[in-house]
Image (cartoon, rainbow, N blue to C red; front, side, top):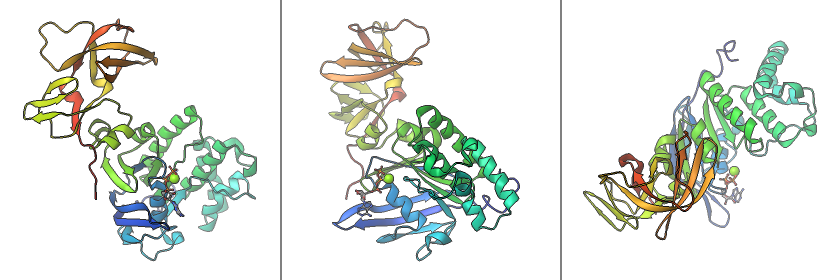
Length: 363
Ligand SMILES: Nc1ncnc2c1ncn2[C@@H]1O[C@H](COP(=O)(O)OP(=O)(O)OP(=O)(O)O)[C@@H](O)[C@H]1O
Ligand SMILES: [Mg+2]
């Protein structure tokens, strides 16, 4: 799709948010001085726990909510006073809001009908998008007769078929089962790349965010905790909130920091670490040895294996070093691996550890 319609989907737009706040009655700061620059054609994800302000920010971009402070620009144009229907955005809402008295085909076709696209072109475009989203067999069904996951896919098709310059997606895959969800993650990402649309995608699932996004903004109570590539956010989280939200468990309090390394409850780790309150050890970057490697003076510690969780491609280990629990993940490649009760040497590769702060954004 798209090739026969060079007039749309091509004018991809950037989104700029400058110092935006939204305060709800009761002095609830849903958004607190948010600033973001989303590039044209970028797959940008807002990631954060329930209530952190993700939907409120999307509604501000869509023009369904007015900021109490700050400004929004889309495609270089200030959006103050521009109503929702005059913005070059489409939204896939968290509650999919389909037209109840129309069937699936009519729901998807609605936006194109409004733009007075010819009936033959509408039929072709609806068929194409329905096939992509795997709802071709449902096109003539009333939407009341669909499951939650099917409705979610119709809502997705209805927004995609318009090829807006910016597509806002509020947890569009949350009602789908795991298999369909991971397939649509890949399909959606490919589609976005092919059409060059700007996607602002909301999820509270960190793996989904990492798989799909060019960049991620992690939100914490209405503020931006960190913006960066999936790799940067996962491997170099800037504060404990981001680290925990990305699934990290191995966060050791730093008791001393100097030019040569850091000291923690697991001993000293050599390396040129930045100053920080915590040391992060990534579980997949730890190596488990039956014995301390001969002559090894590298970073590491002795630990006892408390639990092995076999996951097929990898095994997750629950280790304990004194009072400190440590998580490790080992790829299953046919090597013999330690078992429960074994005492092992855990090697920490130089680039697998990073320091971070208790909380970066304050005030
Ligand atoms: N219309 C409203 N009036 C009052 N408070 C609101 C309103 N809309 C949202 N809020 C509050 O603002 C905060 C942010 O809400 P928002 O819907 O943006 O969160 P979210 O990150 O999308 O959460 P979820 O993941 O649960 O969808 C919440 O505390 C919410 O209760
Ligand atoms: Mg929400």
